[in-house]
Amino acid sequence: MTNPGKPDAKPIAAVIYNPIKVDAEKLKTAVIDAATAAGWGNTLWFETTEEDTGQGVTGSALRRGASVVLAAGGDGTVRAVAEALRDTGIPLVIVASGTGNLLARNLELPLTDMETAVAAAFTGKDRVIDLGISEITRADGSTEEHAFLVMAGLGLDAKMIKNTSTKLKKAVGWLAYIDGIARSLPELKPVRLTYSLDGKPTRTMSVHTILIGNCGVLPGGLLLMPEAKPDDGILDVAALRPRGPFGWAQVWRKVAWENGVLRKSKVGRKIIDLSADVKDVAYFTTRDMTMTVEHPQEFQLDGDEFGEALTVHVSVDPGALTVRVPAGS
Picture (cartoon, rainbow, N blue to C red):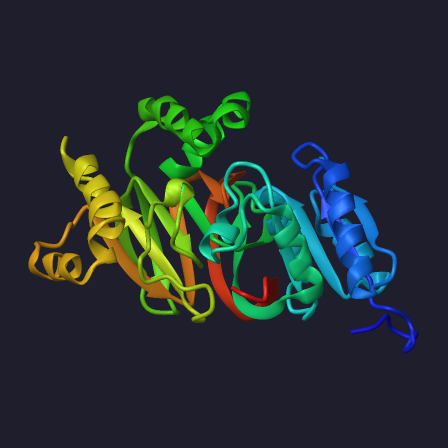
């Protein structure tokens, strides 16, 4: 794709990067080398800020004719850029940084090889995936709409993210969430919510946390939703509802042992089929879900806190995002 109105112009890339999480000089060298080798024009460069985490500068890049957009930073940067690229057809390239890199992990993209990740912008292939869309209603009635790439969560997981030390996260990565869990335990109470799937009659349930996933892998490689696929037009939902003192042990067994170990082998899958179902974790799928809680609860998108929500409406936008991946992926 060439620049609009300039049929003979060279294609140009745009880089949206978080200056706090990225080695800017190393990134610029990698991009300039790859763009020059591919015969592309001069790259556009945009830094994110606290006020503009990626949406606004991505819009600027599109208006200036970018043919591909590289997002270099953590999950928040990638999510913000993807939100701005929704339904444009302009490919996103993920240059992983930070602690989570959730979409990169789920798509099995390079996590530590910057040169390979950057080269995908100029020599890679395109893959179309879904976007999750969340409409958040606050206690005061105000609403916000945001996209998510991997997972949205209401309840304990969002409290955990809010309570995780930023300094500790920078020092030890995703393991810092263990500290967040410990800080969240005093607030550990089930949340009663009403929900409706795909326009069906409303139901109620009590959960400690509910997660809506476009992908299934969490930080540390934990497979929470084994059936989730980023391009199937469906959202997978996991409701964690531990019962009694051993309930969390059952949840851990389901996620870490059954999903993380047994599902990887044919024999293991047979063992799962023969085992009693773990009722402390409930799974279902949907394309459109509305849930309302009695009292506002913490809400998160792709590992970033988004404040308290009273009602959340989530839906899937099938094929809304094009991701450019290394040719050998």
